[in-house]
Structure formats: structure tokens, C-alpha cells
Image (cartoon, rainbow, N blue to C red):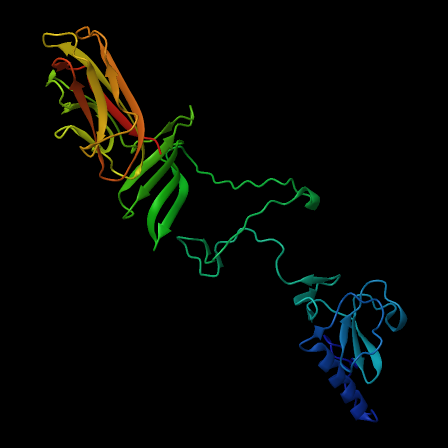
Amino acid sequence: MSDATTNLLLPYLLASQAQKHVTLNESLRLLDGLVQMAVIDRDLTAPPVSPADGDRYIVSAGATGDWEGWDLSVALHVDGIWTRLAPRPGWRAWIDDEGLLLVWDGAAWVSILPTELQSMALLGIGTAADASNPFSAKLNAALWTARTAAEGGTGDLFYTMNKEAVSDDLGLTLQTGYVTKVLLGLFGSDNLRLAVSDDGNTFFDAFTVDRLTGIIEQPRLPRFKGYTNYDNYVGVDTWTKIAINNTDFNGQSAFDATNNYFIAPVDGTYLFGATLLFKTNGSTSSRMRGRLVLNGSSEIRGSFGENSGAHVSEATALWLQTMVALGAGDTVELQGYFRAADGYFAADHTSFWGTKIG
């Protein structure tokens, strides 16, 4: 029969043994040192100068003095002497000065925390992951930073997302109250798309980028080009709205062909232009003018133009162009004027156009 326990090597009380209390106390001393083990430090190679009773250390490699030959063992100080506790696989120790829990694996003290996380089915940080969201995090901030060259890295950082086929979706969804407000990515194609929504159901494309050309398309950009389909008569010395009653295109229905003006759908900076083509009504000295007018009353600075020379019917033209800041709901219209003789602004070739640029 062995005189010590199998796992902790605690001495047994033997039948013929004298002073059994000595053996019992030795076992209790060892138990007190081993159970719920917390060591002060694991970096010392020599005993501290003034240890307290019950202090424990994991001896560092290259031990000297009373610890010589005890490398990686647990040193227990009780009743003024150091006792060596040789670790066995599975022993655990809390390292006070590092806040770290280690386990003896038979050759070294190693962290019980995994150094690699592989093939995990679920991972939740601050919240519970589930089958729909196998990786879930509930945080107030997150940081991805490159491993520097000094740390053995390259200094670069790439975040890669991949989808299986062109027709699949790949992107970021930005939400408020779990209602999707923004989609950014490759949706049903390999062209980049940014779309926005108010309710999470109906989305409007803010822009798309063609993967083959890099050309950006803004399908929701307010822009139009309109023209008049009849000759607009204008009398002498009277600013008159030109009836731009048809459009070649009309993004966001921003141009009101019934009222013959553009309506700004949102605040922003807009660029406008117009062409006025003269058509005679009896005199070629009509001295035509043109301008763009804000909200039916104010001439937009920089939009005024005049052709004062002799006119040629359906050949003499006036071009206008200007940029202006508008608020949502502001209107812009084209007006014409003759200051010497009346005339017409010709059908089909008298036009008005505009677009939001900022």
C-alpha cells in the first residue's frame, strides 16, 4: 500500500505510526497550499526576502537559492520554510499580478483561454448569437487596426466580404430600430449600389457604379430638359414666361410642364441653362432678352442676357446659364422679352434645362 494519495501525494496516516498529528498536519498544509491555488508571481528565480506565511509562487526557469532545481514548480512558504509542490497535469493556478488563470499541461503553465477559435458555430459578444445571426456583437465601439511592420505585419488592413455568384447579394445594411435605412454593396449584380429607404421596404437608388467603366449613375438626381412645342408670342417691353410645356426627360418629375417651371425637390445648388430662338413677327430689330426668374418674381443673378443686333428669323439665338442655391419648393422659370419690336420665341428650339449639382 502506498504511503501517499495518488493525485496530490498527501501523506497517509499509517497504523503503527507515532505522532500521527504530524502527518495529518502535513497533509492539511499541502491541501491548504494546493486547493484554490493563487500564486503571487511566476517571474521570480529566487525567493523574496520577507515572504508571508502561506505565500505561493510559480518558480521561474533558472531558479537559485532555496528554489534551485524547482523550475516551474509551486513554492509554498509555511512555518518559515519553503516547500516544493511539483505540478501535475491539470493543476490550475491564478496569477495575482497578471490577473491570469493558468493550467499545467505536463510541460508548461499555459493559459486556459484558447489561442485559436476555429470552426465555431456561434459567437456572441455582449449578446447572444443565433442561427440567423451566428456572429453577433452588442457594443458601443469597435476597432479594426492594421498589424504594423514592427510587429511582423505589413501595416495594411483589408476587410474582405465575398459572395458566391453574381446574382447573389453582398452588402452592408444600416438600420434604425432594426428598420433598414441604407443598403450599400453588390445587390443582384457586381455593380456598386447605394440605396436609401424610410420604411425598410421601398428603396431609392442614390447612385450606382458600373463595374466595367467606373461610371457613376445617379438615377434619383433632380434634372430635366424641356422645350416649347409652339411659337411663343411676346409683346414689346413685357417680361413673359415661356411655355416650356414638354420635356425630353424629367427626373423626379421636378419640372412642372403645366405651370412651365422647375420646382426644387430639396435644398441644394442647381445649374440651369436655356436657349431662346428668335422668330420674326414683322421686324428683325426685336432686341430680344432672356432671364431666369426665382419664384415668379426675382431675376436670378447671372442669368440675364440680350441680343441687340439685327436678328435673323429662326437663326438668331440667345444662350443663358447660371448656378443658384435653392430651397425645397422654390421655382425657376424662363422668361423672354422684346424691347424694340414684338416677335416669337420659336417652337422646338427654345429650351430650358437644369440639374442639381450639390
